[in-house]
Amino acid sequence: MFIALALAAAPLSGPCADAAPVARIEAEPGDRGLDVEGLVLQPDGETPAAGVVVYAYQTGADGDYDAGENGAPARRAWMKTDADGRFELRTIMPGGYPGSREPAHVHIFFWGEDTPAQWTPALNFSEDERVTDEVRARSDALGDFGFVMRGANMDGLRVVYPKFKLKPQGDRFETSIRHGLDACEAS
Ligand SMILES: [Fe+2]
Image (cartoon, rainbow, N blue to C red; front, top):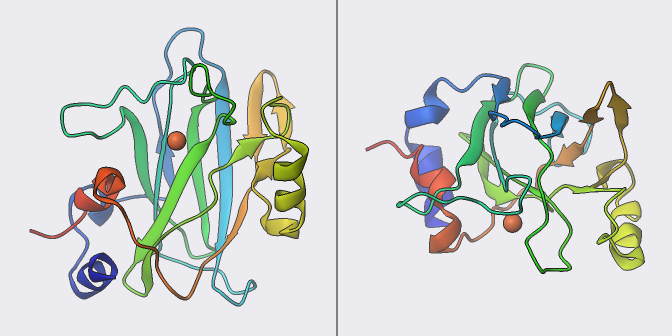
């Protein structure tokens, strides 16, 4: 809660200060492209949430975060939703953790001046065999706000269209995953 209050009270700094609705995570040779075209709505599920910071991070195709010395994953980006609540992340398809049954995923957090810091269910991908029937059912139960992405393939590029509904209350962030928030706190 302290994090949310601190962020709400102070102007956004660092990479959040000039975050744009579109961001890119660099690909390496052999990576498969992924385009996340997101829509963020207020807790009523209808009103577009404009000006909300979107922080995304993910593994590479090998399932590794390639974290640097500060613990931050190598593949991460900040965006800010446009007037219609939209953002776009041009990135690569993540790989699942090596030796794990956990589906490949993209983590997404939100926060802003009127939005307490919060996470969403990580995005999964329908063709991933590690997505179990139980996980699919949990996603389907959320209707338009499901987290197992179906989407389309266009010339080898995977395009997905997740919809998010902000929660009125924020989440508690563990020290180890605060790196996206840390980078944007005014100093
Ligand atoms: Fe993860």
